[in-house]
Length: 227
Image 1 (cartoon, helix red, strand yellow):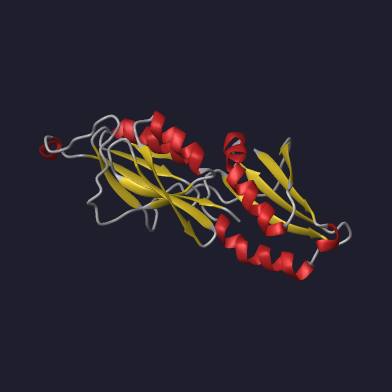
Image 2 (cartoon, rainbow, N blue to C red):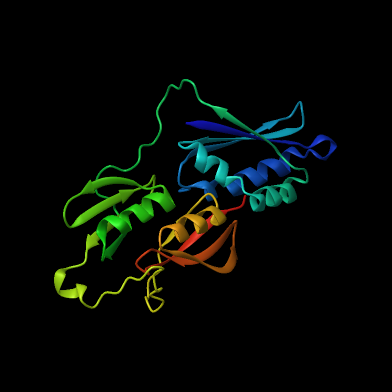
């Protein structure tokens, strides 16, 4: 586990009401980011600083989250570039919300041509964890989502095609979406594992989004939160 401290020294531009408003509006956008256990917004009124604390399960995910695009965005929001410190955790007490272990109330089921390969794709790209596995199913979970991979029944396998790279199945009527620390890092991981993150990028309320496909062509959207 690692904690990342992000400090904005605002000096004479410090406005307590404004920075608190930014924090309240931004807080919900950090739910569901793979590897992020919590984000805490703090304000130092004496030093005129904003200090945001991120707790991560994985250092690689933490470092990938703070992309050049994200740093440029938060510099625009606060008016000054941040100082970022990566702080290893040497001891911890208290409790945190666990990754869901049992059946979820909602999620996504995907029929898989190559069950193990598809599961590894989502483990590597989204940081999900295996929870259940048998000959026909692999269940993957993150902090707030569950993905059930089901081996394609034998009678349908002759109709299935999964190339390398995969041919996107663009005609699907439903598109799941997932959050990642960095779209650029996800694009590299997807390419290496037989998928693709498409070039066109969209701006949402507090996030950037790009569509892509997994190693079997299933189309989904990835979101990178920018505030």
